[in-house]
Image 1 (cartoon, rainbow, N blue to C red):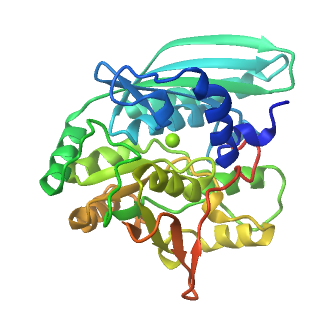
Image 2 (image 1 turned 135 degrees about the vertical axis):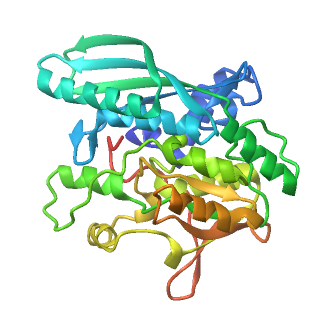
Length: 344
Ligand code: MG
């Protein structure tokens, strides 16, 4: 047997691959509340959260950013969706022999730029130069810390119901929670596609951005019960994971999903499902219904003007279901794999 592309492509196949070959070997790995087998965005120990991510995007510099911006934004986003403040990072570079120094410097400048925006520090790293045809691969680990914004959010959630977790978990959704998306979807995936030579009249750049910069203000309003960043596999993958882990269904309205018309048109033309396309600066969250309007307002105020309440969690069924623009209902299955290789 050999490893297939889909085994690492962020969808249903990857989940199966990980469960069968990786996680099954390590058993119950837990230092705090979250274990390896929970497959949440980060895990915790001694009051910190910890995560790691590797980046293999082709091309490594694209409209809106680079593999360097992805490394800091992507890793910090996996911390931020736990309610943690991104704090300390590692950076490991695997560089192909012959890679241009100017490109490497641009990538490292992006790393520095986003670290300074986050007021976070790069404290350890590693570099290898290889002959393999990889251009550049980056791995970034990150540590996130507890903060007053998370504390406030949990306090507000507990005014409405029991919440047994000390971080925001992707399994925290309950019947009736509103589902909010923080902005227009599919822009990272489409931007990377266009870089690969698709001549279409769509002026879109990657949405790569550290969501902590707006989430901290939204956490101060409070009421968030579950969060994920919809990266590989897009919104469809994030919603299915939240639904399955929380043991509730989700109903969303197609009309309410924020997406630019030209991005939607581009996807339609290529037969791509925008719900499965990668995002790198967005959050999908569950919010106690009483706080949903206030959280939406806080997102708008924090600059996320396209944020929208797209549906709610329900115990009526177990799947993710979408009410289409023509009024029919259809199941949104978890994508088997991201439609684009090397997207992040
Ligand atoms: Mg994530």
